[in-house]
Length: 147
Image (cartoon, rainbow, N blue to C red; front, side, top):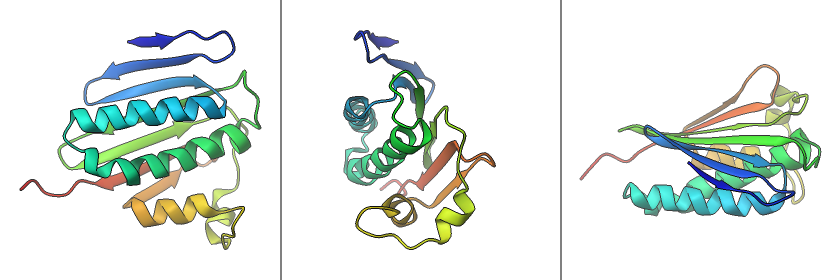
């Protein structure tokens, strides 16, 4: 387990069987750190070619968790997990906020400033879903078959 102890910005990386869990303070700088950890994880499993799609979805989801879920409160925590099986990559993002009505948000049209995240998730992931409360997002991407 790696831990980066910056005074205002906790960032803890824990290795698990088939994945990593990151517990981080709710700020934008930690999203960059989570992206770097994700890219290293993908490269170490021979999946560097998926970095763009995975990191794009991860960044959108983490940005929403920081800005909207935790309402920009730096003392709040976001938990991010990436897990790999032989056929799928699963990302989970959990914030400490009250949640939101994701059913309504899925139906809204996106514009230049809002709603891009759901469009990106639909484009780059096979499935995505929220818990009933709307503060736990799961993204799933099927892996290409081995050569």
